[in-house]
Length: 483
Image 1 (tube, helix red, strand yellow):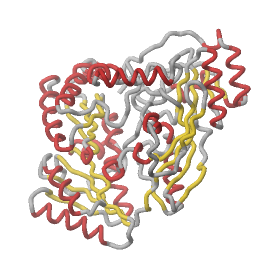
Image 2: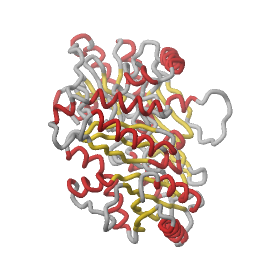
Image 3: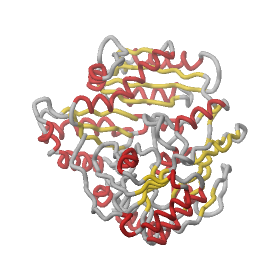
Image 4: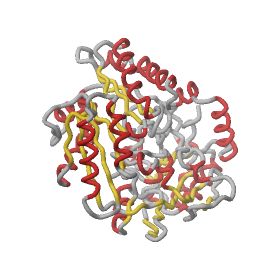
C-alpha cells in the first residue's frame, strides 16, 4: 500500500563533507561508493513506499576493518550511518535521509566455515539467507530460518530485526540460532564475540543485546549460527477446519502426536485462498471445497523412513473423526508440496493486487488468536462497514499478519484515510490481549509512535540509556526503534 512519503530535510552531504567522501573512497575504493541518483536508486527504495529515503552516498565495505574505518571516519565528521542489508525490511529500518551515509554489507558475503560436528556455520553479515540454507544442506545440515525474502535478504539484517519465519514454532526466532557475533560499535571498535560455545556463563550476553537492535547499537559483520540435523522426512498437509477455534484443537493434537516434529502451523483464511487463486498464476485450491479457515501443517524429522507421514495421516484422521477437521490432503510429491506453499506465499501479494491493504504484524498468546480475530472482525466492521479482515500466518506461535482490505464499494483514497483509526483500533485490541504490536517485522520508523504509546516506560528508559552508553553521539541508525 502506498501512502504519502515522509520527506526529510534537503541538506546535502557533499556540500560540507567532501573530505569525508574522499576518505571513504580511500577506505573501500572509488568503485565501491555510489553517489549518483541512478546508482543509488536500488538502495533508497523503501519496499512499501511508506518513506522517502534519500542519501548522497552508499558505501560497500569488504571487511570488518573497513566497516570500522568507515564508522570512525563518519563519527569524526559528525555524519550518521544507516546500516543496510538486502533492503527488504517492512518498517523503514534502512531508510536514510540527506546528510547520512548508507553502509551496505552486500560485499561481505563469505561462508567462512561449517563445523558439522559442532553444528555451526560461520558467515559474514552480507550472506544471502538462501545461500546459508544451501550451504548447510550441502553439509547435510539444516538452517531453519525461512521467510519470503530469503532469496535477497541478508543474514545481518535478519539478525538485526530478529526475524521469525515459518519454522519459529519448532526452532525459535533467529535469535535462538545465534551462538556468536562480531560487530562494529559506534566508536569504531570491533567487538569479537564469535563464540561457538553452547555454554558461556561469563557476564552479560552481548549478542542478544545486538540481535534485534536494528543497527542502533552496532553493525553486525559476522555471525556463528546454530545448525540442526538435515530433515530426511518432511510431510506437509493442508487441512480445512470446522471453524477458527478448531485451529487450536488441531495444534494441540499435532503437538501431542508428532513427537516434537511439528515445525510449521500456518493459518490460511478462505478469502486468502480465493484471492491467491484469482491473482497469483499457478495457485489453486488444495481441497475440493473452500473452507473459511484452513491450516498448513508440517511434520519434519532427521530419521529416514515413512513414520512421519503415517503420524501426520493419523493426526488428521483422528481430527476428522472428532469433527475438528472437515477435509485434508497430505502431499504426495514435491510438486504438490510446492502447490500447497504457493497459497501461503501468495497471500501477501494477492492482498496487494486486490487493492489497498492496511496491514499489521502482531502477536498474542496462542490461545488468544481466535479472540483477536473475532474482535478485530467486529471492530473493523463497526469502524469501516464492508472492510474485509484478512488474517493469516504463524498461529502456532501467536504471530498473525492482520490485514484489512479495502471495501468493494469504497475508493482507495477514502480507505487510506482511515488507516490511523484502524491502526489505533488494532493496537488497542492487541494491547488489551497482552500482545505485541510488532511480532517479527521490527520497529524501524514505522512503529515509533506505538513504542511510545504501548511500551513499558521503564523499559524504554533502559533502552535509551543503553543507546546513549554505546552510541553517545547517535551516529548508528538514528531515529529508529527508540522514540
